[in-house]
Amino acid sequence: MKVYTKTGDQGTTALFGGTRVPKHHIRIDSYGTVDELNSHIGLIRDQQIDPRSEEILLHIQDRLFTVGAVLATDPDKATLKSGKDRLNIPRVDEEDVVLLENEMDRMDAELPQMTHFVLPGGHTTVSYCHIARCVCRRAERLATALYDIEPFDQYTLKYLNRLSDYLFVLARKLSYDLKAKEIKWIPKKLD
Image 1: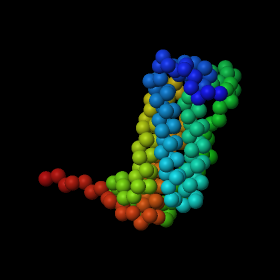
Image 2: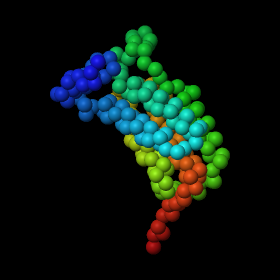
Image 3: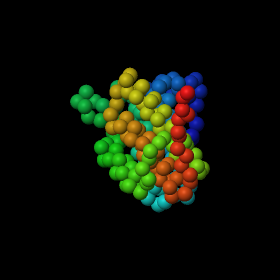
Image 4: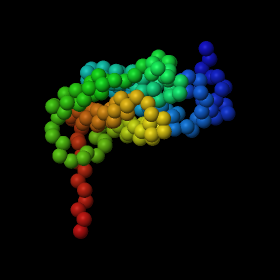
């Protein structure tokens, strides 16, 4: 099988299920941003981080492929009138969301209490986390816009929301582990 198909040369692409849409369709932008996020998470995983975080990030990358599959599926072809899954696509579920929440709680227990917003940076690995967090928020914004037009499984949205929180806590944990300085954002006082 060749990587190139030439079917997109006129600016369209196929959704899972075969429907062709313009490459600038919000559905394509949504799952393309999730793919971008997955690449950023791979970059974090490639850094010198603790084995537990590396394992969780690998699990997250797997789940993001699932999120991408949900977003890439034509909703008219995803389910039968009976409500059964026609295309047999995987789903994220409550267990996936709970894993992120448990990991955040575990990391938070080791960290000093946060009293201010923190400025991104302090170490390259931490900065990668903040970039991934921002891309995750963009993916969530695009997915919610798509959801307003063509609803899909709500756990997909919940997962993206929780994942951005996880990436923020991971950035703080890696700052702590790497002994990087966390710079507090203290708003300038108005006269």
